[in-house]
Image: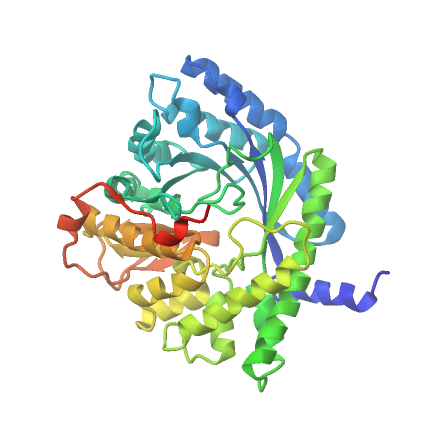
Length: 451
């Protein structure tokens, strides 16, 4: 039975509290596009993407108008390109250019999957793709890239961490004319998931169907507004309010996902419960933590309040959806969250505190700007640290760090839009080079032996 008060509440969430569907992402398998001739393979890739996704944007816009629910992004994820390019002899950058053209043709804003999975070593095509990432992100505007360097089951590929430290730096250097934006489209994972709808880390896993629709919701402003109505609630009541609110937010995501699936004629996959912030006023995860009782995000108590938030979001959201997946938690991207930006600028939020916070939330050290002279080995060690948190805790963690070439602490990179602006944060400059250059594989933890 339709409840008028529920309808009015949802309208208020959309109009006043920044509720939106952050993305509907179509996952597309490219396994049937493999060919030894790279030009033939690229032609197949273009045809597959433009055929499967030809109606994605139109259907998304129709649902927006029908239900009055903003759908901010329509996106595509594809099979990791290192798998597709392994049969070819030429540079995989041709695939990136093809992906970019296909994304433009169907009207989506981003396409993910220029990716490699190297958690246990390098297969054919992996190193070639990784080395091509800086060029690929320089010559395209919509393509996003990711590399998985570790997992709880396999341990951490330290050789891959070392390479990725250099690749991140090269991405920033290659795109210095666009505020080092190439590095903002590259994510380094541990325990990457196959059904993530969020960029820049989305790719379509080999265990997924040929084509599928996944949805990412967003509603930090809604959660904060709900908590503001209960200023004297105890912590158990706070958790209950967040769970109830997360349930309502996720129901909207379920509705959009199922509707899009039916109209596009492809299976509905998952709703990712992650609270994804924006630089817009009133749409901040940091402000939720401050509403719970912190003077500013980053002060003592931040990790505890974030753990509470993350757990309550999952418990509330999972009851509202037929299938939950992706990353599902609370994102803390510094440049994309107005409260995080303020806390980083004031010095209350440090890189070390952010790392502690990543142990209890999704996903990791995200959209963090560091000085341009930060060494590749330091970035590699940052990646290894974050991968260790994911490996030991059996959770997805990631690093999306942007070396601000020519800038130092206190300056700022500004990309506008959802990517926001990033204050350059201080990073420890003592050298980890001897550790990083040892190479090899950090062994998996004992609790990985579950069979």
